[in-house]
Length: 402
Image 1 (cartoon, helix red, strand yellow):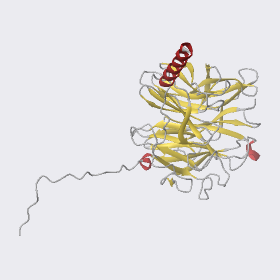
Image 2: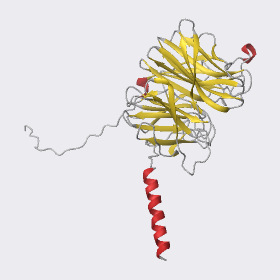
Image 3: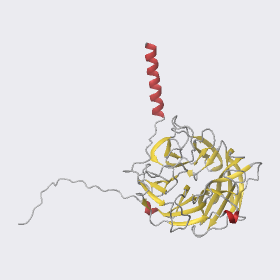
Image 4: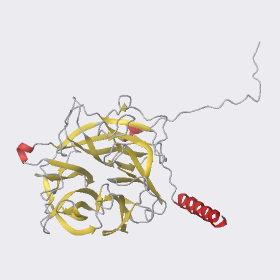
């Protein structure tokens, strides 16, 4: 009897200790109520452009996905995975184009890498980083059909306009999803996920400014989560790093690190609705946090409308959702269709504007997308604070002349 009681007490202590050590605030939403699709406020002042139109009959390419953006020396670069065959097959290529007028018009599509360095190698979409005068590309790559996934790095030679391979810089199945962020400890952190092992969210952490050396950190999953497709993004706030990841259910997953991404609480369901697609999050220079995906009360796993949830300056939870655009967008430019999926956003801030690249499939199947661009004035994302004046008793009674 005593032994049974002792075991019960011990098990309780172990459980309490575990849950305390792995506790995470799962509240990503602190607004008054998440709006329905028809009720969400549409952003004003947004300009739209087409980066690469879907035109398989012209160029032979069907699959296009994973737009990444970078401002580098007053030029705007956009990259994506491109394929004349099926998604994530051996004919996949990492490709890009350039705009010299802020995204209004774009160059012809050029190639970063077609995967000729090794047998059965394919190169796909990834992320950019403009750093110390160089433009880097970190692209998800694989052998066969998504086997031995890894990340390869490239640096643009601006004289020859060719991308110079830097080799494999992250292994372990890591596929990058969002631009690396410089942390206050001097390292860079690159969010993504692991393809395999249940597909958990993950980050890669650099060795200082050496962008060829990265260590993969897999984010654990709560026992209730199971398999996922953990494409992820982050919010960085000093040593506190918040990871927001895709889930199969229409909920955002959240995990936290308090030591610059070295250790993590398990990914758990948050209280924020989010479609099962890649999110993009970050911190604006005005202190606001943002999350771009599809986050409405009634959206389910539908990949529209394209929304941006924002916080008040300095807060790590969101309290307002704006619609960037709906699937039906007759005024254009860009494709308009009630069934269009607007997905896989990627955002960068530049001179008071947030540039958002995204895929638009026009209701086609198989991620046969156009690449499109939305340019959002940062001042349109501000949240008006409620000002409450406290009524204080008068210390002196007012005197009136009779």
